[in-house]
Amino acid sequence: MTLADRIAVYRERVEEWLHGLYHGMIEHPAFELVEKEAEDTEDTFMFACFADAFGIPSPVSYYTAELLPYLGEEFQQFERRMWDRESLIERKGQQYHF
Amino acid sequence: MNKFVFFGGKGGVGKTTVSCAYGLTCAREGLRTLVVSTDPAHSTSDVFDQQFGDDPQRVEGHENLWAMELDPDEEVQRHMREIKRTMSDQVSPSIVNEIDRQIELAHRTPGAYEAALFDRFIDVMRDSEEYDRVVFDTSPTGGTLRLLALPDFLESWIARLLSKREKSIDLYEKAAIGEREARKKAAEDPIIARLTERKEMFEFAGRTLREDATFFLVLNPDELSIRETRRAIEDLSEYDLGVEGLVVNKIAPEPDAGEEGTGAQYLRQRHATERERIRQIDAEFPEPVVARIRQRVEEVKGDLLDDVAAELDIEVAPGASV
Image 1 (cartoon, one colour):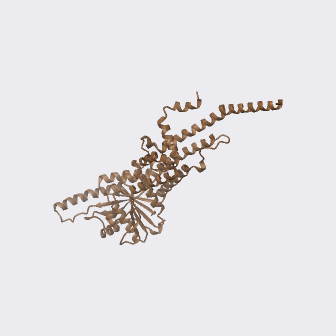
Image 2 (cartoon, chains in turn purple, orange):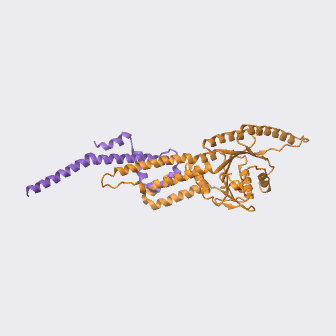
Image 3 (tube, one colour):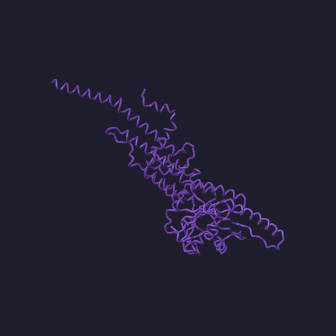
């Protein structure tokens, strides 16, 4: 193995590490944060649509029921999230991966 | 005169009679007229002695006259069936059962009946090209007012849902850093499409009610119905809907001067009270009284309906039809 090869391998490794660090420290948390926020907004949306699933009468549920065929899976996830969520802090804290 | 004419008022004041009589007058003038009953206790069938259904049907013995009775229950069922059908096309069978519950729930809330009625309402207004005049015989005041308030209310609600949905999808798109595929995209979102469609429908209804509709309130010369009318006018103006005129119905006749029996005494007193009430109506309401209709001995149908129609002083103005 020549010196040039060894330098190339070394650089490759450093690059991989740097990318890993970048992904782990910056890219992924950022992505996760934004997607979490999107999920939260979606929860608000779902709740406004289907408040009656939680016992709150909603005047628009007749209309929003039309959306259910397209929201099938999301609706189930949403229902689970709503029933499971114990506190706001718990959900917001998830991103810190302690 | 606008294309859509609404008759409202307290229960039992004779809205159906007045709207049928008005429909008849319009038809006589050569306008293709449709009488729509939105009152769950349909009595259009009784007035014309003919059974009507959920689709417009020609009124026998009259030209240019059609009638229909909206059936919200039927509409609720139809709506539910349709959603379930779409669902079995879209969603895997394992979830269908879970969501069925939610669908049934949504169709059993108290609002479902109103929403269904409202949907039919809009359908009728939308598919009314072949008619020159559509006369709505509405349910008693409270229900109708809530119905007329719906477009505004629903419009803003749906707008809110729409903006929430757009925001969350926007976030999903932003979350797709680099090469990643976004979990959802605004352009292909069926939810946004559906909500927009609904929003346009409510906008249409609101616009039509404000610009293309005329409201008349029917009342009797008694304290309760005067009070309810006053409230109704206030509520309607809150939604930017003006009342064009009042129809005073069921006015007791005055007995001849010579009559002195118990019946005549009763009638004379009754007549005096009612005259007082009518004076009060004339003085207190800025809206003009467009018709004073005498009380009949029998139910108003057949020839009697013609008499009542003759007493209606609401202009038909065929030239002004939209």
